[in-house]
Amino acid sequence: MRTNKTESEWQDELTPEQYHVLREKGTEPAFTGEYDSVFDEGTSSMHIAAGQAFMMRLMAQWY
Image 1 (tube, rainbow, N blue to C red):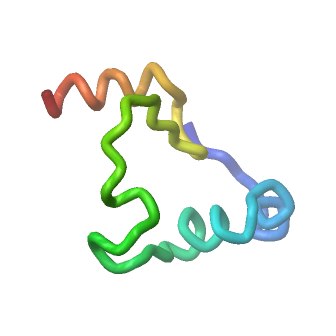
Image 2 (cartoon, rainbow, N blue to C red):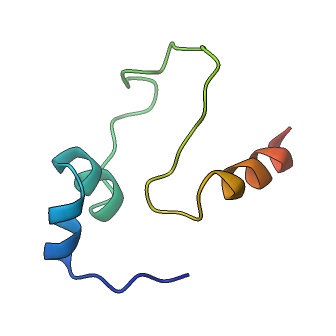
């Protein structure tokens, strides 16, 4: 499913950090992120995707 939004609309919808990562392909260097050493159980979410059902199918392929 493709979303046709302008960059201005994305900037209005996303936080500055989300915009940088999702639209400008920004990321931190490997193994330096805030959550690198966190192993608590939880639910991963993707802001721009088909939702939790998509993630569950994807994760099932990994494990």
